[in-house]
Amino acid sequence: MSHSYVGILDGWRPTLRGQPGQNYIVATAGPRRSSRKAKAKPGKVDVLVRSLEDIKSEEQAQNVLDEVKPQYVVWSAGAGGKGGSSRTYAIDRDAAMHFIHASVHTPSITKFLMVSYNCNRRKQPSWWNDDQWAHAQKVNLETLKDYYAAKINADECLTALAKQRGGGFAAIVLRPGDLTDDVAAGRVTLGQTAAQGQVRRANVAAVAAELLGNDKANGWYDLLEGDEDISMAVERVVRDKVDCVEGEDVDAMRSKYKL
Image 1 (cartoon, rainbow, N blue to C red):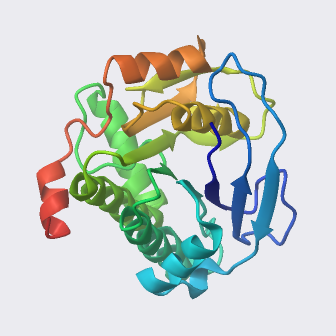
Image 2 (cartoon, one colour):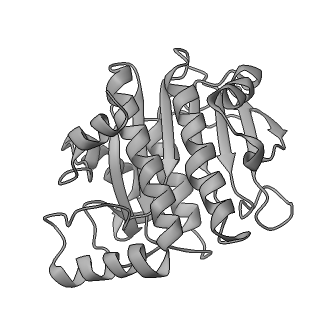
């Protein structure tokens, strides 16, 4: 089965070359694996270069989606700390939320995968001790204050609007720890992880692909380096219905967006 994607990516992607912090819209269409046993086949990749800072409304985001006509949307864009707090909010919050709204309101789009970060939450989860929560609070309220304020709104918006859309739409929030450029190892810790830790960017991409390929994946998934095979890790968290949104106030999210 073929699927088409629109990926909103940032400038660190090794397959793309551009100015630091430049954001890309990458539309891919063509054959992909229908199962892990099937041999991957080459497909067609079209790259659209757009300024996400210029996306000021759901309508403008919808225009991009109408041009690409994707079935899945992957958001891995960000200001990357460049351009000050205004740019962080413009891309990580505002543009992201415009694309979330447009995607949820497009019936042909069935999945939206948001790449976030594992400390991005409002409440201490049951699987973190007080030291881990203190680390997350320091990251969110001091080190990455503006980034946290932007990303928490985007993650919650996606979660809330997905509830409105209902069945047939998967809102996947992939939440890696500190990113590294090490060569992919193909082994991770996925699900309810610790608050501190690193993960290879290539492993993040591999986990994202596995989650998109699983028809039952839906929810928040934290990700660090580990010892579990990526495909087995994805199978496990989906089978066991692991969702790191546990402990967050989903009703408050829905109320915030008047659902």
